[in-house]
Image (cartoon, rainbow, N blue to C red; front, side, top):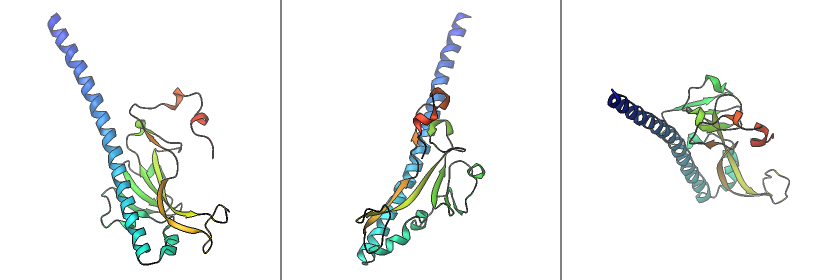
Length: 183
């Protein structure tokens, strides 16, 4: 009887370790998939910039700021829903991308919510935007055609986010204001 209890205990421990590793791999797979799509978008954006440079139309990059970077891909990801007009993130299925045409954000809805940290309220998601990269010659904080010099585009996250190995619980922290200062 003691041997049976010992065997069952060992099997239980091994099963617990296996399930924990499987969950870790699932989170890592989602993180890698999201970053792979971001890498593809940045590569497509580089080609887009290079085509403007080679044609002598760098000034037309202004039109690409705040645009949908998915349009630069010849094959859209299977989990891309398309252009939506200010959707409720709660209505979007996890592991889906969409472009919010109202706010001009590319959004990824996270599936593994306990392993993702972001200051956004509501469903866990990461938001990105195409930004114009330029030298602000007159130092007024905004781009002025004919004055400021355009260098290219960048795809930046709107808010800081982090994938975490262990599930997070904001109640473990004294105040979320300490982590995410108000804008």
